[in-house]
Structures are given as C-alpha cells and as structure tokens.
Length: 381
Image: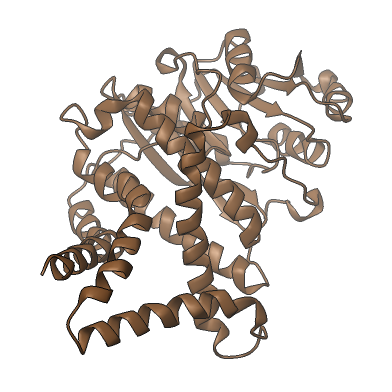
C-alpha cells in the first residue's frame, strides 16, 4: 500500500509542477498589478564583464553605442576579468567613443562586477553580458519601468534565434515556456531574478556580491525584492542570442541549478513567510530542484503497483526513457524524432538538476564554461 501512496503522490506532485502550477499562475496573473511605465532618462551605468570575449566584444560595443539613449546620461564600462585574448585591445579601440576599460586579474565574474559597480556613478545599473548585442531601443524601454517607484530591478528579454537542429528547437521551446512563466510572475508581483544577459537594478539596492556566487542575476535582484521592491520583466527590451545545442544547454543548466542551491543558502527567507511570493517560489524554482527525485520516486514505486497498473506504468516510463536514449540514432526527419528529441531534452534537464548538487563538493568557479560561437550570428534585427 505504501508503494501505491508514494506513486500517486509523486504523480500528483509532478503533474502540479508541469501543468497545475502554470494553469494556476495563468489564472492569478489575470488579476495582476500593472507597472506604471513612463519615458524617463536617469543616469545609467552599462557594465559589460568580459573574460576572453574577443569574438563578441566589438559587435556588443557597436550595439551599445547605437542605443537610443542620451549619451550624456550614459556610462559604458568594460571590465576585463583577466582576459588573455585581444578583448582588452578591442575595448581600447572604443575609448575615443566614451567606452571605459577596467582591467583586473582573474577573479571571477562577481569580483569583476563588484569592482566595476564601485567605479561607476549612474543611478541605474545596466548589467549585460558580452555575447548578446542589444536592440537600439532596449535600454530606453528597460528604464521606463523605474518610473514606478515600487520597481527595484528589471529584466530584459533574451531573444534566441530559431535553431535548425531538433535539440536547438526543443531548447527554444523550453525558453519560450520559461519566458511565459516569468511574464506572468511579473504581472502578479515579481520574478525571482533576471535574465543575466541583460538586466537593470537601482544602484542603492545593489549589495556587494559574494565572490563564489554563480547567479548574480538572482543574487542582486533578490536583494531588492527583500527590501520590498518588485522584480519585473519587460519583454519589449531585447538582447539577442544564438540557439544553443543540448550539450551546451546542459552545462549552463548545471551551473544555473547549482546556483539555485547557493541562492537558497544566501536567502533562506525564500522558503519562509518573509517571502510574499512563497507559493510561487516553491511551485516554480524549488520544485525544479525536486522534480528529478519525484520522477525517481514515481519510477521505483510503480514496481509496487498491483497489475495491470504496474505493467502499464512501468512499461510506459520504460518506453519514454528508451526513446530518449535512442534519440541520437533516430534520423532527423523520421516522425518518431518529434517525440524522442523532446524526451531527451527533458531527461537532460533532469540530469542537470541532479548534477547541480556538485556545488556542495567542488569550487563554484569550476562550473563556468567559456562559450565559443561566431559573433556573426548575433546581429539584432
């Protein structure tokens, strides 16, 4: 009987995480809080941390210099975190256009951001990664949300180009679902971080970042959240990126989920009554960490079900995981690929969630992977 209880409880929890909570969120968001956006032009500091980003930096800076924002209100600071390629010389090419360069010994992204933020003066900090160019109106639109005094941090939208491979399309579908959730959370009250490639925060709300933090885009915004401010998404403010393959996304997801464990250690109040969005955090972020273990509990307990349920559910799960395992052998245009590829992507994400536990055993910096890609594919529309 205990196996039956565990099985159905696991099934119910999985169904809630994957379908029930999104439906609940869609309903709750219908009565959300509007953001009072208005055109404003406070002083801003655009900070671009770089480690060996020579493939992207020139294109990034060109997009920043083309922004539709008053130049006398804008600082642009490139901070090189011990780059050993030509990133620093590329940044120096733009000094005559107002770009500043801060060079540091290799210390990690949090250390670089702390040093850069201390050197800037803008009222609003715009933090953006080197790889993704910005749309010309992106910063102007992003800053409009700060006209609402309840807003402490704003995330832009990362627009990922259409992929051609099956796994790139699956990752793109996952990212669109993720954006849908963040958009609804933003309407309710707040998201639980920002898109690290492009976000903004009021300077006075930004704390010093611990040197080992993997997710500055959660650590900084959540500081504003616990000071009573909203964290919102503005899908009009866009940065652009290329689609990633499943292997690349796996490494990124391991780092992200490991970072979530760190965030829980830094902000334990996320799981308590001080978090006004407690039910959403548990149903969304915390549940993502639990989901692989719920799947294991469901799989193991299904062997204890009475027949014919045992045969039905054991064989059904076995078929799902078999399809995921065989995906690499299925031709791209074969109809079964439409099922096997999403199955493999889902399983890959679950494995990444388990691998995220490595944060308790290895230095955080070992989870960073330098991205290699062609900058020619990263041009805003």
